[in-house]
Image 1 (cartoon, one colour):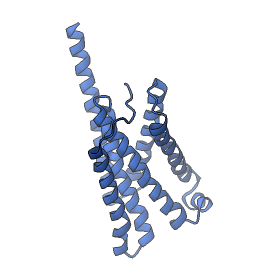
Image 2 (cartoon, helix red, strand yellow; image 1 turned 60 degrees about the vertical axis):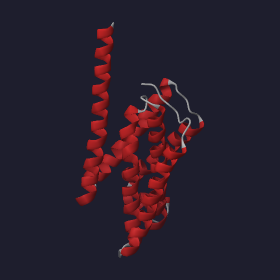
Image 3 (cartoon, rainbow, N blue to C red; image 1 turned 120 degrees about the vertical axis):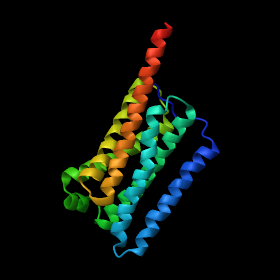
Image 4 (tube, rainbow, N blue to C red; image 1 turned 135 degrees about the vertical axis):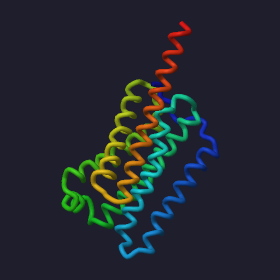
Length: 199
């Protein structure tokens, strides 16, 4: 599968993703004002908002080689989801917990390590995406690895470590991404069969 770095991003493409990011960020920061646990609910709301931005990115990525527009939207959603995740990470580490050391102490080393690793690798991927714009097979493998890791962290966190409506969000998240991958695999098989018949 070829990679399509961001190119010729139109104002409507950027605006659609940026406006959604803005609405979700404002909602995630304002809704907790109506609750008794302001900081805890801001932490929760920002991870929900991150999931809602990450979902279209991961659903669009399997189709990114079909057009530059799809690739651009996937890249924009991926990037703005990371920005929202940074808001969540700030609130969790420096507001709920008292810094990095206390985060490891309160969350435990395994979970905290995975979360900090996600902040680092996702951030590096976003930087490489916009600054390097490589199209080599190694870049494609790296991108898919980071996206798979991110998907697994969110899927496991939302489904296995949470309950109630958050678990439902996690199930919807997993089903949508799985369906996108299945549709893309089915479409690729159909194209391969058609190609063989032509030959």
